[in-house]
Image (cartoon, rainbow, N blue to C red; front, side, top):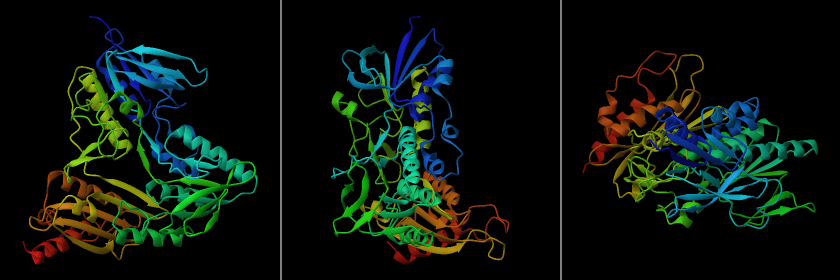
Length: 463
């Protein structure tokens, strides 16, 4: 049997999971695997970067699951600091550039995996490229930020401005507070955490202020001001305010890194992510797969594709892709949009649709919000938690859940994620047989209390 060649573009979760799974199914005599990674690191947890920055993780290497050397020892020709700059689909080859030497070469493939990830959103503003301005997506980004923080701290600087209040912005704000910085968060919304409805985001805002983070809502950043050396010194807003900064972190969000795919004419969705079928094959291309933060995935509740960059999805994509490349079969059916985070002691979680998502999907719905405790109220350490639930008005079908509360709150969202995936109604949720003991929950778990209230809302709303 002639040896086939698999080329993988991108060396993190999706790309190297795909390569590793394909290698398990086919040995080097059947499948040659060449992987290109533009950075220094592979198979790492980008989600752990804020905890490294904040000192909860001892060092950078703790975030690396498998090094380039370990991949090579498993029969994968992994080339770091090498960026693929062109796809020649008719010729079944890629052009790659060595970022240290500048030399370029073409590599042919029989099968191709695109796992190019995402990049931090960088608005086109004066000074956005200044020294001391950092987007955080890769481990190389994290290392550059750490180097900048150490220089700043060495010079006596202790002021940080975070632009954006999504998951990354909020987590980085907490990390910087942990390092002793005075932190200001500027964001355009009415409340932080746009992944939540504003009423739930308001709880996050209160918690951030309580831990000493200055949070400025409806702040439109217009420029980054720099000093004589070209380093960031302040962030200016449309309101005429200037917020002094020794370091600026961009937490506006990320966008799929799909310039290669776009130039090659591959199909892209509304968010600019690559479109695939359920086996993660690029639509219309039998021998090309894609996964991770560069793709759009099916939202099982809204019924449309969305860009949802999460390491959990990327690893699953890689397993599916590797199975397909290796001659097996697997699928990735879609997601319900589950995510968790925390700010200090406050845990934040959501799954399914927010109110505006449901409206955009043309759904009629009711909401129910309750406040309860994470354990029995009399048990030591009981913390307050708020649960918001959305249900379809006529059928009572669960549409979404948001949770904000103390320790022990966030992972309850997994109950809702399973219920959403199963297509359960809030009526059905009320009778779920959840575990109970005073150290773990009240007699009625907060999820069930919210479901009971949602049932009442559905019945009151009628058809």
